[in-house]
Amino acid sequence: MAKKIILTGDRPTGRLHLGHYVGSLRRRVELQNSGEFDRIFIMIADAQALTDNADNPEKVRQNVIEVALDYLSAGLDPARSTLFIQSQVPELCELAFYYMNLVTVQRLQRNPTVKAEIQLRGFSENAVEGDTAQRAGIPVGFFTYPISQASDITAFKATTVPAGDDQEPMVEQTREIVHKFNSVYGPTLVEPEILLPDNAACMRLPGTDGKAKMSKSLGNCIYLSDTADEVKKKVMGMYTDPDHLRVEDPGKVEGNTVFTYLDAFCRPEHMAKYLPDYASLDELKAHYRRGGLGDVKVKRLLIAVLNETLDPIRARRKEFEGRIEEVYRILEEGSAAARATAAATLDEVRRAMRINYFDDTELIEQQAKAYANR
Ligand code: TRP
Image (cartoon, rainbow, N blue to C red; front, side):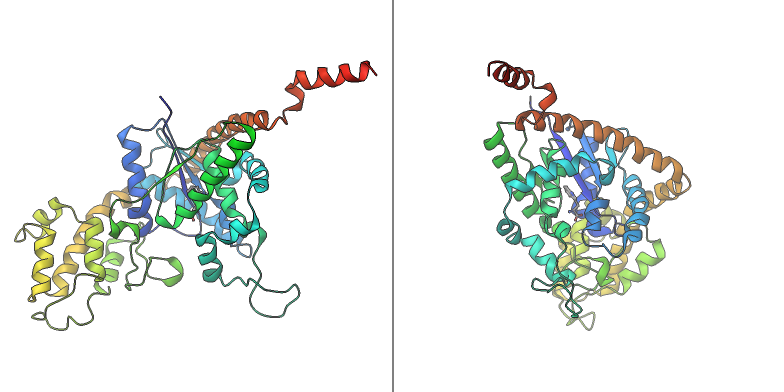
């Protein structure tokens, strides 16, 4: 049977937050523990992080360990998942270099995630060299990162990429590259599929301010490493329904961040434990809609649920924080294992491309013979 292989990862530009957790991290741990996959590769994408942090390489360097600590504390287990650092697998660059010939500038320009990030980063599409304007042009490395991401995924022959919907255009572009490569050079690479979160609240967890997405630059994050007190403060200040002024008022659940978080985190056993008067979260929502239920009660539930979820993660983090050298050793061993897999794929790729000159005795003999007969 065909192997089932996972590859996914994160840019090390900061600690991971609840958006990362419900969007992908929690799922990865479940998939790891399900035993359904032959191999799981989890990559700290430091090289990709540099594509839009050219001015701040030290931030990327310092955050590699933060992301590793978040991975380990969330339950990724190095005995079952290969944790590695992107830059330590140089085969990824080689593969990306070959893929660059299979993708047009126009196709990259149509990638919706690249487009959105150009806006977000304030890169200018028509900056002129030597321009005194504030806006910087688009770095070539940034522009081509979808190609690099295709090599991340395919170097491991990943079948499955657990990620948020912002990664959909990347996986789509990867599939196109695989298709193109296989049709030019013969069947070699595997077309991956994205595995999206299974509920809407997890797909795009809003920030505590109710803004579209939890993101470090907006300062609206709850981090996996936040203390119970920080979580309490952040939830108490969270955006709810601005028209729900008095407890008696009917309230809106849609677009109410506290309820969105409950959708993402609250399980039936939490209701039974913290609010046994309600049979389910749906009943709590119904009461809120009717009126007579105050925000504070709902927020207290969320604080309890979040802290129950985060407590074991915090405890594991504390442990690993005291074993930093060992965490680097885990990454070093993971990177060596990842490199071995990527190198094996690159051997196949070079053979398919027929650039394995020194092993190609047929080519050498044929050309030698041709010259001998002149
Ligand atoms: N683009 C991902 C992010 O922004 C990180 C990443 C790099 C990735 N390579 C990947 C994710 C391959 C999934 C598969 O965090």
